Length: 145
Ligand code: DQA
Image (cartoon, rainbow, N blue to C red):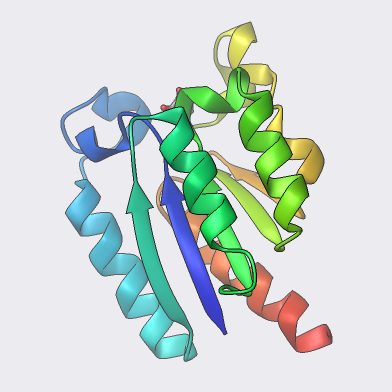
């Protein structure tokens, strides 16, 4: 199984940005953690991080027929981007939405997620563990297929 891990804007600033919300682990720490977990589970992973909405759309389109699943944290584009929602719908690759912080417990504008409608599940507020849980969920779904 091949899974594409997509991170949106400002997630390259993990470890620096608002540690009360996002913790102290850096983006490099996150990638290393996911790689170790994926290795243990026998899953192949690739990573994309971009601060640009169109790049995220391109990454999702790239997954078409190349990946068995997508784990995506669209960052702030979660709350604004119809284009990212449409991209996930277009490729119909099983996708899990992840948020490090508990978006439901934060400002009201963070309660809206456009992409959620196209996702198998949303995992929020579990810190960086959420990415590992998302991989496990995709694996479980893949095993069912
Ligand atoms: C986030 C939550 C978003 O509201 C925010 O804009 C982010 C990160 C999270 O991982 O908790 O950039 O997606």
